[in-house]
Image 1 (tube, one colour):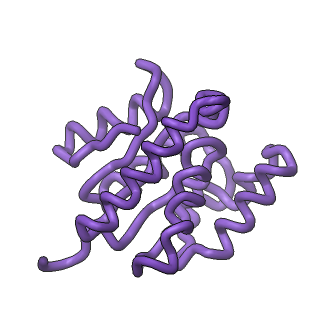
Image 2 (image 1 turned 90 degrees about the vertical axis):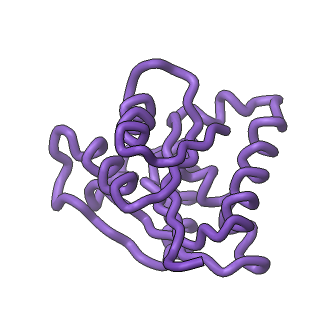
Length: 156
């Protein structure tokens, strides 16, 4: 296989709500992550948002002893986690420590910076792993953007 295969994560912030009492969703996430690793994906972009982004990154890190890969934190602005609850800030900081690379796109929050982060990740990816349950919002926009660019889209 020539070159790297790259994946971006996108999904709803209330991912954990969808998973309450439903192990199937988390099992599907782990299955898709291992499938991506087995298929040669070795670089992953994470937007570091609460919910699916953090869950996908945690799931990926579960495979760190079995596969070689890099995890890139695509951070829209430096204080992204400032409004997170304490447990989410802790998750964010732990994942950040494990990231191979950190890319900060803006010096401060600006309108549209979250979608700019999503486009940045999709533009650099071959495949997008998503958790999409609504026909509106940032995840919906990002998945449609990926489809317009003819990226492979996998659904959890």
